[in-house]
Image (cartoon, rainbow, N blue to C red; front, side):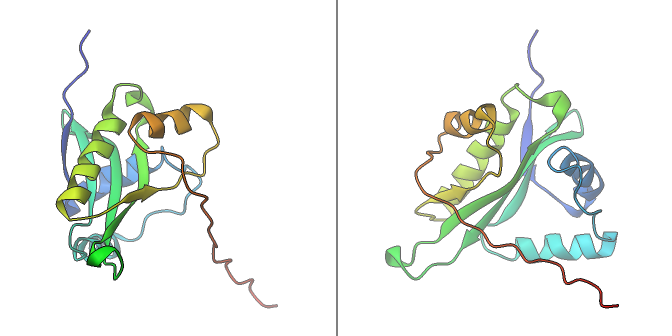
Length: 157
């Protein structure tokens, strides 16, 4: 049995409803998506960063995978930007078919086309299969990542 063909492209505002359904496979406890107008505005602002995009993988008019590439201007490395990949997700029913890797390959090519000297991603997962997925996609586990998250203020009273 052959796997269906994946078409990879940049997300458009028309994709937002399906994209939010797909994001439930990334983080089911996540806050609900913003109102449609706010979501379109966020996508428009993201696309204003030269080289940045949300890429989607589509099979038979259904979004099955996605990742976000942000290209960040840089004053070191001769002014070469660097890329950051975030929100890597494949629909649970479409995993283990190479779709996630195809999206990462597409984002990598876009980062190199934008002149990035490196491409980074972080994962909060410690599952061996997730780490192996990123290694198999050509990423190396070579740096120590740190993060600081904003804590929502508590209501007074």
